[in-house]
Image (cartoon, rainbow, N blue to C red; front, side, top):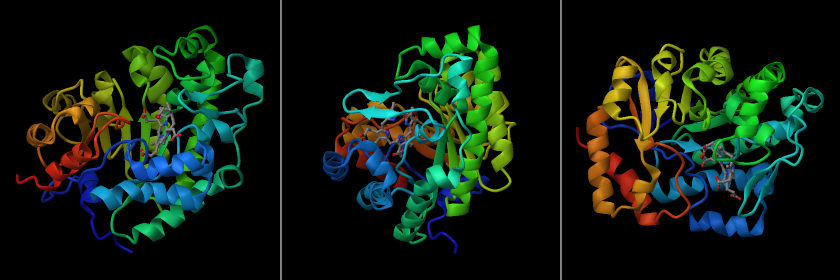
Length: 342
Ligand code: CP3
Protein backbone atom coordinates (compact mmCIF):
# COMPACT_ATOMS: atom_id res chain seq x y z
CA UNK A 1 0.00 0.00 0.00
CA UNK A 2 2.69 2.47 -0.90
CA UNK A 3 1.82 5.94 -2.14
CA UNK A 4 2.64 6.56 -5.81
CA UNK A 5 3.65 10.21 -5.45
CA UNK A 6 5.62 10.16 -2.21
CA UNK A 7 7.46 13.50 -2.62
CA UNK A 8 5.68 14.95 0.40
CA UNK A 9 6.49 11.98 2.64
CA UNK A 10 10.10 11.96 1.45
CA UNK A 11 10.47 15.68 2.18
CA UNK A 12 9.09 15.03 5.69
CA UNK A 13 11.80 12.40 6.18
CA UNK A 14 14.44 14.87 4.98
CA UNK A 15 15.32 12.81 1.90
CA UNK A 16 16.68 14.37 -1.29
CA UNK A 17 13.92 15.09 -3.80
CA UNK A 18 13.75 16.04 -7.51
CA UNK A 19 11.66 19.10 -6.60
CA UNK A 20 9.84 20.18 -3.44
CA UNK A 21 6.28 18.91 -2.88
CA UNK A 22 3.47 21.46 -2.85
CA UNK A 23 0.08 21.86 -1.17
CA UNK A 24 -1.80 24.91 0.11
CA UNK A 25 -3.18 25.42 3.59
CA UNK A 26 -6.99 25.60 3.42
CA UNK A 27 -6.86 24.33 -0.15
CA UNK A 28 -10.13 22.42 0.33
CA UNK A 29 -12.90 24.97 0.01
CA UNK A 30 -13.20 28.72 0.03
CA UNK A 31 -12.10 29.77 -3.47
CA UNK A 32 -13.24 26.87 -5.70
CA UNK A 33 -16.53 27.20 -7.64
CA UNK A 34 -17.21 23.45 -7.28
CA UNK A 35 -16.94 23.93 -3.50
CA UNK A 36 -19.21 26.98 -3.53
CA UNK A 37 -21.86 24.91 -5.32
CA UNK A 38 -21.88 22.40 -2.44
CA UNK A 39 -21.74 25.22 0.11
CA UNK A 40 -25.00 26.59 -1.27
CA UNK A 41 -26.76 23.29 -0.74
CA UNK A 42 -25.37 22.09 2.60
CA UNK A 43 -24.51 23.96 5.79
CA UNK A 44 -20.99 23.82 7.17
CA UNK A 45 -21.28 21.00 9.69
CA UNK A 46 -23.39 18.91 7.30
CA UNK A 47 -20.45 19.13 4.87
CA UNK A 48 -18.07 18.07 7.65
CA UNK A 49 -20.28 15.27 8.99
CA UNK A 50 -21.25 13.64 5.67
CA UNK A 51 -18.33 11.49 4.50
CA UNK A 52 -19.46 11.65 0.85
CA UNK A 53 -19.34 15.45 0.95
CA UNK A 54 -16.17 15.82 3.05
CA UNK A 55 -14.25 13.39 0.84
CA UNK A 56 -15.52 15.03 -2.36
CA UNK A 57 -14.45 18.50 -1.12
CA UNK A 58 -11.06 17.08 -0.13
CA UNK A 59 -10.31 15.83 -3.64
CA UNK A 60 -11.74 18.83 -5.54
CA UNK A 61 -8.52 20.90 -5.45
CA UNK A 62 -6.46 17.82 -6.31
CA UNK A 63 -8.48 17.20 -9.49
CA UNK A 64 -8.06 20.80 -10.52
CA UNK A 65 -4.41 21.45 -9.64
CA UNK A 66 -2.68 18.17 -8.82
CA UNK A 67 -1.11 19.08 -5.47
CA UNK A 68 1.28 16.55 -3.91
CA UNK A 69 -0.85 16.07 -0.77
CA UNK A 70 -4.53 16.35 0.12
CA UNK A 71 -5.84 17.73 3.43
CA UNK A 72 -9.09 16.35 4.79
CA UNK A 73 -12.03 18.75 4.67
CA UNK A 74 -13.13 19.30 8.26
CA UNK A 75 -12.51 21.98 10.88
CA UNK A 76 -10.46 22.43 14.03
CA UNK A 77 -13.69 23.28 15.90
CA UNK A 78 -15.14 19.76 15.69
CA UNK A 79 -13.00 19.10 18.78
CA UNK A 80 -14.74 21.56 21.15
CA UNK A 81 -18.03 20.43 19.68
CA UNK A 82 -17.25 16.84 20.65
CA UNK A 83 -16.23 18.11 24.12
CA UNK A 84 -19.79 19.30 24.78
CA UNK A 85 -19.18 22.94 23.82
CA UNK A 86 -21.73 24.33 21.35
CA UNK A 87 -20.15 25.54 18.11
CA UNK A 88 -22.10 27.18 15.30
CA UNK A 89 -20.74 28.31 11.96
CA UNK A 90 -22.60 31.47 11.02
CA UNK A 91 -22.58 32.45 7.34
CA UNK A 92 -20.58 35.66 6.76
CA UNK A 93 -19.51 35.71 10.42
CA UNK A 94 -17.52 32.56 11.15
CA UNK A 95 -17.45 30.42 14.28
CA UNK A 96 -19.87 31.32 17.10
CA UNK A 97 -19.81 29.56 20.48
CA UNK A 98 -22.89 30.74 22.42
CA UNK A 99 -21.70 29.34 25.79
CA UNK A 100 -18.01 30.22 26.09
CA UNK A 101 -15.76 28.76 28.79
CA UNK A 102 -14.84 31.51 31.26
CA UNK A 103 -15.03 29.90 34.73
CA UNK A 104 -14.59 26.66 36.65
CA UNK A 105 -18.36 26.17 36.43
CA UNK A 106 -18.19 26.40 32.63
CA UNK A 107 -15.26 24.01 32.60
CA UNK A 108 -17.16 21.41 34.63
CA UNK A 109 -19.44 20.65 31.68
CA UNK A 110 -16.51 20.11 29.28
CA UNK A 111 -15.90 16.41 28.66
CA UNK A 112 -13.09 14.34 27.18
CA UNK A 113 -15.26 12.41 24.73
CA UNK A 114 -15.11 8.94 23.29
CA UNK A 115 -13.67 9.68 19.84
CA UNK A 116 -15.45 6.95 17.92
CA UNK A 117 -18.85 7.97 19.36
CA UNK A 118 -18.50 11.68 18.73
CA UNK A 119 -16.11 11.95 15.79
CA UNK A 120 -16.53 8.61 14.03
CA UNK A 121 -17.79 10.52 10.99
CA UNK A 122 -14.30 12.01 10.50
CA UNK A 123 -12.81 8.51 10.38
CA UNK A 124 -15.44 7.48 7.81
CA UNK A 125 -14.55 10.56 5.74
CA UNK A 126 -10.87 9.58 5.90
CA UNK A 127 -11.58 6.03 4.70
CA UNK A 128 -13.73 7.28 1.84
CA UNK A 129 -11.13 9.89 0.87
CA UNK A 130 -8.37 7.28 0.85
CA UNK A 131 -10.44 5.25 -1.60
CA UNK A 132 -10.94 8.25 -3.85
CA UNK A 133 -7.24 9.16 -3.73
CA UNK A 134 -6.34 5.59 -4.72
CA UNK A 135 -2.91 5.91 -3.05
CA UNK A 136 -1.90 8.48 -5.66
CA UNK A 137 -0.90 11.08 -3.03
CA UNK A 138 -0.79 11.20 0.78
CA UNK A 139 -3.65 12.48 2.94
CA UNK A 140 -3.01 14.96 5.77
CA UNK A 141 -5.12 14.93 8.94
CA UNK A 142 -5.12 17.92 11.27
CA UNK A 143 -6.15 19.45 14.56
CA UNK A 144 -5.95 22.89 16.09
CA UNK A 145 -3.40 23.46 18.82
CA UNK A 146 -4.91 23.41 22.32
CA UNK A 147 -4.20 27.15 22.70
CA UNK A 148 -5.89 28.00 19.38
CA UNK A 149 -8.92 25.91 20.38
CA UNK A 150 -9.00 27.62 23.79
CA UNK A 151 -9.03 30.97 21.97
CA UNK A 152 -12.40 30.12 20.40
CA UNK A 153 -13.76 28.37 23.54
CA UNK A 154 -13.08 31.39 25.76
CA UNK A 155 -13.71 34.18 23.25
CA UNK A 156 -16.82 32.60 21.78
CA UNK A 157 -15.94 33.84 18.28
CA UNK A 158 -13.06 35.02 16.14
CA UNK A 159 -11.18 38.08 17.37
CA UNK A 160 -8.31 40.39 16.49
CA UNK A 161 -6.67 40.00 19.91
CA UNK A 162 -8.52 37.16 21.73
CA UNK A 163 -8.66 39.31 24.85
CA UNK A 164 -11.15 37.01 26.62
CA UNK A 165 -8.89 34.03 26.03
CA UNK A 166 -5.94 35.88 27.51
CA UNK A 167 -8.09 37.06 30.40
CA UNK A 168 -8.93 33.45 31.22
CA UNK A 169 -5.25 32.45 31.10
CA UNK A 170 -3.99 35.36 33.20
CA UNK A 171 -6.79 35.66 35.80
CA UNK A 172 -7.74 31.97 36.17
CA UNK A 173 -4.65 30.03 35.09
CA UNK A 174 -5.78 26.84 36.82
CA UNK A 175 -9.01 26.80 34.84
CA UNK A 176 -7.15 27.63 31.62
CA UNK A 177 -4.60 24.87 32.15
CA UNK A 178 -7.29 22.32 33.02
CA UNK A 179 -9.13 23.23 29.81
CA UNK A 180 -5.92 23.07 27.77
CA UNK A 181 -5.18 19.61 29.19
CA UNK A 182 -8.67 18.32 28.38
CA UNK A 183 -8.29 19.63 24.82
CA UNK A 184 -4.83 18.04 24.57
CA UNK A 185 -6.06 14.64 25.76
CA UNK A 186 -8.96 14.76 23.31
CA UNK A 187 -6.69 15.87 20.47
CA UNK A 188 -4.18 13.08 21.05
CA UNK A 189 -6.93 10.43 20.99
CA UNK A 190 -8.47 12.10 17.93
CA UNK A 191 -5.22 12.22 15.94
CA UNK A 192 -4.43 8.61 16.86
CA UNK A 193 -7.85 7.60 15.54
CA UNK A 194 -7.11 9.53 12.35
CA UNK A 195 -3.85 7.64 11.95
CA UNK A 196 -5.68 4.33 12.44
CA UNK A 197 -8.22 5.44 9.80
CA UNK A 198 -5.42 6.01 7.28
CA UNK A 199 -3.98 9.54 7.23
CA UNK A 200 -0.31 9.71 6.23
CA UNK A 201 0.75 12.81 8.20
CA UNK A 202 -0.85 15.20 10.68
CA UNK A 203 -0.58 18.96 11.04
CA UNK A 204 -1.24 20.93 14.21
CA UNK A 205 -2.50 24.46 13.42
CA UNK A 206 -1.49 26.99 16.05
CA UNK A 207 -3.11 29.86 14.21
CA UNK A 208 -3.13 32.18 17.22
CA UNK A 209 0.16 31.23 18.89
CA UNK A 210 1.59 34.57 17.78
CA UNK A 211 -0.86 36.37 20.09
CA UNK A 212 1.25 35.31 23.07
CA UNK A 213 4.57 36.65 24.34
CA UNK A 214 7.45 34.19 23.92
CA UNK A 215 7.27 33.30 27.63
CA UNK A 216 3.50 32.86 27.68
CA UNK A 217 3.71 30.90 24.43
CA UNK A 218 5.81 28.27 26.17
CA UNK A 219 3.38 27.97 29.07
CA UNK A 220 0.00 28.17 27.32
CA UNK A 221 0.71 26.81 23.86
CA UNK A 222 3.94 24.97 23.23
CA UNK A 223 3.79 22.82 26.41
CA UNK A 224 0.62 21.20 25.04
CA UNK A 225 1.75 20.94 21.40
CA UNK A 226 4.85 19.11 22.65
CA UNK A 227 2.61 16.56 24.40
CA UNK A 228 0.80 15.97 21.10
CA UNK A 229 4.08 15.54 19.21
CA UNK A 230 5.43 13.17 21.87
CA UNK A 231 2.30 11.03 21.65
CA UNK A 232 2.22 10.86 17.83
CA UNK A 233 5.77 11.13 16.52
CA UNK A 234 6.59 7.42 16.59
CA UNK A 235 3.46 6.62 14.57
CA UNK A 236 3.33 9.37 11.99
CA UNK A 237 5.12 12.55 10.79
CA UNK A 238 3.82 15.60 12.66
CA UNK A 239 3.92 19.11 11.16
CA UNK A 240 3.69 21.98 13.66
CA UNK A 241 2.47 25.25 12.17
CA UNK A 242 2.51 28.31 14.39
CA UNK A 243 1.37 31.58 12.89
CA UNK A 244 3.50 34.45 14.14
CA UNK A 245 5.64 32.05 16.18
CA UNK A 246 9.02 32.52 14.55
CA UNK A 247 10.42 33.37 18.01
CA UNK A 248 9.77 29.76 19.05
CA UNK A 249 11.30 28.07 15.99
CA UNK A 250 14.55 27.17 17.71
CA UNK A 251 12.85 25.12 20.40
CA UNK A 252 10.35 23.68 17.96
CA UNK A 253 13.22 22.30 15.88
CA UNK A 254 14.16 20.01 18.78
CA UNK A 255 10.64 18.78 19.45
CA UNK A 256 10.46 15.61 17.38
CA UNK A 257 8.16 17.25 14.83
CA UNK A 258 8.94 16.11 11.26
CA UNK A 259 8.43 19.61 9.89
CA UNK A 260 7.66 23.16 10.98
CA UNK A 261 5.33 25.59 9.26
CA UNK A 262 6.59 29.14 8.76
CA UNK A 263 4.57 32.26 7.91
CA UNK A 264 5.65 35.02 5.52
CA UNK A 265 6.85 37.43 8.20
CA UNK A 266 9.93 35.25 8.74
CA UNK A 267 12.42 35.06 5.86
CA UNK A 268 13.47 31.61 4.64
CA UNK A 269 17.06 32.45 5.62
CA UNK A 270 16.05 33.37 9.15
CA UNK A 271 13.84 30.28 9.49
CA UNK A 272 16.76 28.08 8.39
CA UNK A 273 19.11 29.89 10.74
CA UNK A 274 16.77 29.58 13.73
CA UNK A 275 16.17 25.88 13.11
CA UNK A 276 19.82 25.04 12.53
CA UNK A 277 19.21 23.83 8.96
CA UNK A 278 18.28 20.38 10.23
CA UNK A 279 14.50 20.14 9.96
CA UNK A 280 12.02 20.22 7.08
CA UNK A 281 10.31 23.61 6.77
CA UNK A 282 6.94 24.35 5.17
CA UNK A 283 5.66 27.66 3.85
CA UNK A 284 5.70 30.61 3.54
CA UNK A 285 4.16 32.50 0.59
CA UNK A 286 2.05 35.47 1.69
CA UNK A 287 -1.52 34.33 0.82
CA UNK A 288 -2.31 37.88 -0.40
CA UNK A 289 0.57 37.61 -2.89
CA UNK A 290 -1.60 35.18 -4.83
CA UNK A 291 -3.36 38.34 -6.00
CA UNK A 292 -0.29 39.30 -8.05
CA UNK A 293 -0.33 38.39 -11.76
CA UNK A 294 0.50 34.70 -12.46
CA UNK A 295 3.85 35.51 -14.10
CA UNK A 296 4.96 37.37 -10.97
CA UNK A 297 3.68 34.62 -8.71
CA UNK A 298 5.82 32.14 -10.61
CA UNK A 299 8.93 34.28 -10.22
CA UNK A 300 8.34 34.77 -6.51
CA UNK A 301 7.73 31.06 -5.96
CA UNK A 302 10.99 30.14 -7.69
CA UNK A 303 12.78 32.70 -5.55
CA UNK A 304 11.16 31.25 -2.40
CA UNK A 305 12.31 27.73 -3.25
CA UNK A 306 15.82 28.98 -3.97
CA UNK A 307 15.91 30.67 -0.57
CA UNK A 308 14.62 27.66 1.40
CA UNK A 309 16.55 25.19 -0.77
CA UNK A 310 14.76 22.37 -2.60
CA UNK A 311 15.45 19.71 0.06
CA UNK A 312 13.90 19.50 3.51
CA UNK A 313 11.26 21.82 2.17
CA UNK A 314 7.51 21.72 1.46
CA UNK A 315 6.21 24.59 -0.67
CA UNK A 316 3.06 26.09 0.82
CA UNK A 317 1.45 29.37 1.77
CA UNK A 318 2.29 31.07 5.06
CA UNK A 319 -1.38 30.75 6.14
CA UNK A 320 -4.65 29.65 4.54
CA UNK A 321 -5.60 30.58 0.97
CA UNK A 322 -7.99 33.55 0.82
CA UNK A 323 -11.48 33.28 -0.68
CA UNK A 324 -10.85 35.95 -3.34
CA UNK A 325 -7.92 34.29 -5.13
CA UNK A 326 -8.42 33.86 -8.91
CA UNK A 327 -8.27 30.21 -9.99
CA UNK A 328 -5.44 30.79 -12.46
CA UNK A 329 -3.34 32.39 -9.71
CA UNK A 330 -3.69 29.35 -7.45
CA UNK A 331 -2.73 27.26 -10.47
CA UNK A 332 0.35 29.43 -11.10
CA UNK A 333 1.50 28.79 -7.54
CA UNK A 334 1.21 24.99 -7.79
CA UNK A 335 2.63 24.87 -11.33
CA UNK A 336 5.65 27.00 -10.42
CA UNK A 337 6.67 24.45 -7.79
CA UNK A 338 6.04 21.50 -10.10
CA UNK A 339 8.08 23.15 -12.86
CA UNK A 340 10.99 23.97 -10.52
CA UNK A 341 14.39 22.97 -11.86
CA UNK A 342 17.02 23.12 -9.14
O1 CP3 B 1 -7.18 23.08 4.76
C1 CP3 B 1 -8.26 22.70 4.30
O2 CP3 B 1 -8.64 23.05 3.18
C2 CP3 B 1 -9.10 21.72 5.09
C3 CP3 B 1 -10.22 22.33 5.71
C4 CP3 B 1 -10.08 23.29 6.88
C5 CP3 B 1 -11.15 24.14 7.24
N1 CP3 B 1 -10.79 24.78 8.39
C6 CP3 B 1 -12.43 24.28 6.49
C7 CP3 B 1 -13.26 25.50 6.71
C8 CP3 B 1 -9.04 23.47 7.80
C9 CP3 B 1 -7.66 22.85 7.86
C10 CP3 B 1 -9.51 24.41 8.76
C11 CP3 B 1 -8.70 24.82 9.92
C12 CP3 B 1 -9.15 25.96 10.73
N2 CP3 B 1 -10.43 26.31 11.06
C13 CP3 B 1 -8.26 26.85 11.37
C14 CP3 B 1 -6.75 26.75 11.35
C15 CP3 B 1 -6.15 27.22 10.10
C16 CP3 B 1 -6.25 28.70 9.89
O3 CP3 B 1 -6.77 29.10 8.83
O4 CP3 B 1 -5.78 29.45 10.76
C17 CP3 B 1 -9.04 27.80 12.06
C18 CP3 B 1 -8.53 28.94 12.89
C19 CP3 B 1 -10.41 27.44 11.87
C20 CP3 B 1 -11.61 28.08 12.46
C21 CP3 B 1 -12.54 28.56 11.40
N3 CP3 B 1 -13.33 27.75 10.63
C22 CP3 B 1 -12.79 29.89 11.03
C23 CP3 B 1 -12.12 31.11 11.64
C24 CP3 B 1 -13.75 29.87 10.01
C25 CP3 B 1 -14.44 31.05 9.34
C26 CP3 B 1 -13.59 31.78 8.40
C27 CP3 B 1 -13.04 30.98 7.21
O5 CP3 B 1 -13.66 30.98 6.14
O6 CP3 B 1 -12.00 30.37 7.37
C28 CP3 B 1 -14.03 28.52 9.74
C29 CP3 B 1 -14.97 28.01 8.72
C30 CP3 B 1 -14.39 27.15 7.67
N4 CP3 B 1 -13.57 26.08 7.89
C31 CP3 B 1 -14.65 27.27 6.28
C32 CP3 B 1 -13.95 26.22 5.67
C33 CP3 B 1 -13.93 25.88 4.21
C34 CP3 B 1 -15.52 28.36 5.61
C35 CP3 B 1 -16.96 28.30 6.00
C36 CP3 B 1 -17.82 27.44 5.10
O7 CP3 B 1 -17.29 26.73 4.21
O8 CP3 B 1 -19.04 27.46 5.28
